[in-house]
Image 1 (tube, helix red, strand yellow):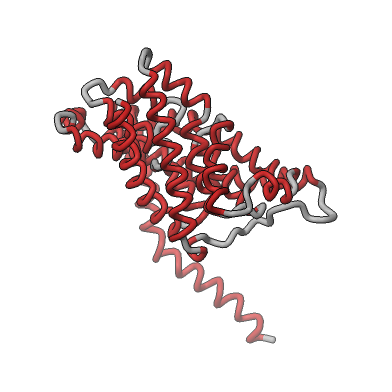
Image 2 (image 1 turned 180 degrees about the vertical axis):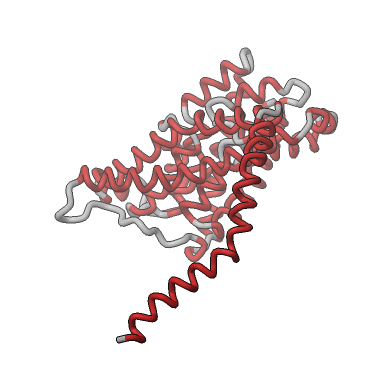
Length: 334
């Protein structure tokens, strides 16, 4: 009994003796917290940081409604649309299902943030991944909203609108076929969320569960991509942009890379391209074709949804195909 009663005293003594070990660090943290917060607040008030906050917030707010639309549509497909619908709409042969899925992207007015969860839901409903990825690339690039915005940004230039439509659609179809013949299932991470309606569960419950999962999951990666795009906007000087505008081919590659880093929403990128008056029409076409299908926030969303192994390979291949399609089609029409 005496030994049992002595044990708490020993424990208390150890905790008391432990204080001298940690109190200097606690005192230093308390003393430095005030100056650290002061320096941080002054640093955040710098013009560069204010511009960073503005760009980051703009990219996030610009894409958030379309991400909301995409996750809601994904949840609705998962809960309410029977799997047999897709087997009836799409051709049974995957090689034919890819171009049909690419053309179907024309009717969905959304951006890349919306297309990722929808493509994930389509795969979960039994659609071949090649067709789902063709839809993923075409939906944000060739829908009526984007084409209308392009026509407004480039008045009197219907060739630019046609070139964007054909180059973007060709990129989506080619990438779908490349995945069909060269893609590996092991590059896709296994889905965690159950897809399809489960017996005994309300369809509205399925919709809310899927919507909440997709929105919270994709929203985090959207913020990461927006922060990366804002960092590039702030750190790269204007003189660097001017240095590449003189070379025809370097300007194409540079604007393609710029589109990836800026991560402008597809509904607004035509106005950004129109403002780059120092670059050739072909380079500005590459900017509009690459941006909606490969940018920082889209890569982050793909990595979070399908896995990093997929995102790295798919994004690299898509960039090459998009630049080639832009050069071939733009060289003929522009």
